[in-house]
Image (cartoon, rainbow, N blue to C red):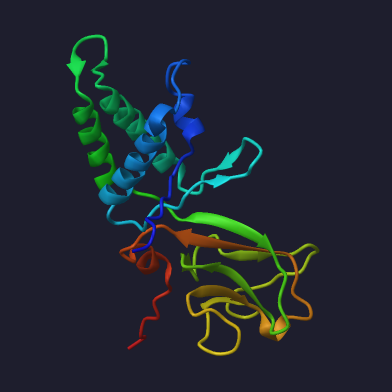
Length: 218
């Protein structure tokens, strides 16, 4: 049997700074709280794909790859998980509130979560076939109000005429789980930056919102 993989949305450092100064990761208490919070966020945001793990830059800084509201919820849930592990009670100044009630609150927020697509940008750098891999195993929206190419000069590059965003072809060196920027017909001239949108949803709703629908004139 293989090893279970863990995908912590936030690093231990993010939880540690929310706790009293004398807290530490003794017996992996903080690490476990974050992993439990990550599972909690993935379980209750069931309209969305699994949230991606954070990136450790190795220099004491981190990149949170999940949306910001998910980062905040995961941080709050990890605090609850940590104190539950310590047998503590949360006091809000007027009455005792169990951490289970806090979790119920965030479960409801995750059930009602609405995350807009995230816009990414990358410099155009085509391969020999005039295409460029944008991402793999992600829900890229081929058409979106923010999908565009901005030129380094005064050129205008139009989607559908000069370039497109498409899935990888089941041929050659392309990944069928990949999304590609395709400017094959203008590979010798197109330049600038491509902006594209990534949806977090697992139910396809964003595709319905942003994919053009061709209507009959009859």
